[in-house]
Structure formats: C-alpha cells, structure tokens
Image 1 (cartoon, rainbow, N blue to C red):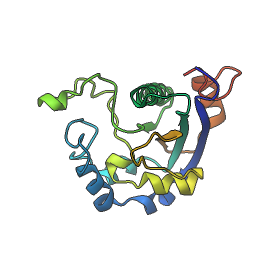
Image 2: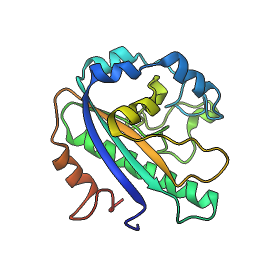
Image 3: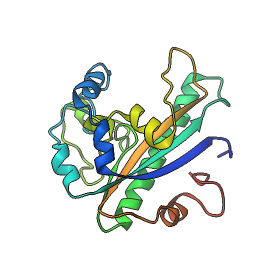
Image 4: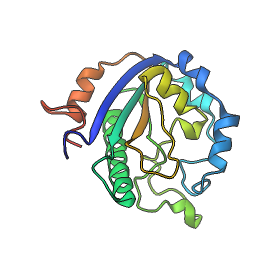
Length: 198
C-alpha cells in the first residue's frame, strides 16, 4: 500500500451527549430508503435496533475517519474496489479493537461487508451475528454533520465523476475514555504512518 493511499486519519473521542445532536432518524433513514441496498444487508435498515437501548451502556463515542485517496486510479471500478477493500480492512480491525476492550461496541464504516454477499438478499438469517455491526448512518445519525463537527472533514458527494478521495467513518462506543494512541499503535501502525499496514 502506497503512503498516499490514506491521506488523513483522524480520531476524536466525544461524549455521547454531544453526538445526540446529530441523531436525525427521519431524515437519514429517508436517504437509506432511496439506496438500492435498502433492506438487502442485515446491517442496513429496516431493522429493529433500539438506539437508546444500544447506547445506554456507553458514555463516549470515538469517531474514526480516514480519507482514502483515489487519484491514482483512472478506472472507476478499480477505485471503488480499492475503497471497499480499505473499508473491509478497517471494519475487521475495529472488531479486533472491540475484542481487546472490556466494554466497547463498534459501529462499522458503512454497511457490514464481512461476507461477499449478505444472506439477507436471499431471505436467510445472518451467518455472522457475532461480528455483524451497524453503522452510525444505519442507526439514523447524520454522518456528514458528525464529520464536519468532530473531524473537520467535509463530505463530498459523487456527482457522476470520480472524487479525489472517499471517507471512511466508523465509531467505537465505550463507557470511559480510552488511550487511543496506544490502541491505534497496536492495530494500525508499526513505526509507520497510521493505517499503512492496512
């Protein structure tokens, strides 16, 4: 992986009370309904997740953002494949982080992509219920607002042409504040820039 493939990697821990201002389920889940993936992945709406119950155990959200540079790609399909590979690796690393912590819950970047094809498309139950996780947006959070407020990222929406980069946004919920420098060192770098070992 080239050093410029992940342009910026940011982490910010915020109290859940601050994140609650970006909980806009009517608006956000309305966007989900317009997506061709709606109802075709177990991590996507419609689902029966009670956000208040899920979040009740935690007090902090560590928001994780990574800009994935796409300027080295001339072919749109190659660029998207690169982005989705980075997203899958990030989600797998987040599960490792969750398993290392005593009381934490991961929210994936985008929909769950652990399986090549989600069983929901065929009407079958999830085969990785122990690993499948929801995302902030699938729970009704405005990720564009979260990115701008807490990571100083402004999301750019594809208007039919290849963007310079795409952004991965994930979160780790926890009861207390965590030593993110140490956690990221273990899971994302070994004496190199963050995420280079992805």
